[in-house]
Length: 67
Image (cartoon, rainbow, N blue to C red; front, side, top):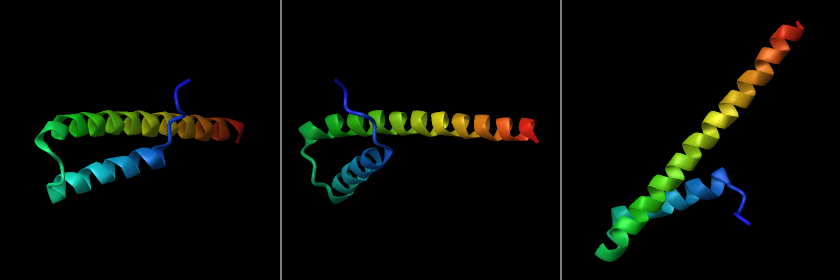
């Protein structure tokens, strides 16, 4: 079973990868793997934000219809 997505954990992992990149702590063999992982996490975060925005807008629209 896949682990439930955690926006907070994803952003922390992205920040960790950025810190490693900025510090030059990555071996050249790890570089592409870490950049790919960061890219995947960023996409998941964007998708999560979009989904949340859609849900909030739906709730707000329902509230306006009830008024």
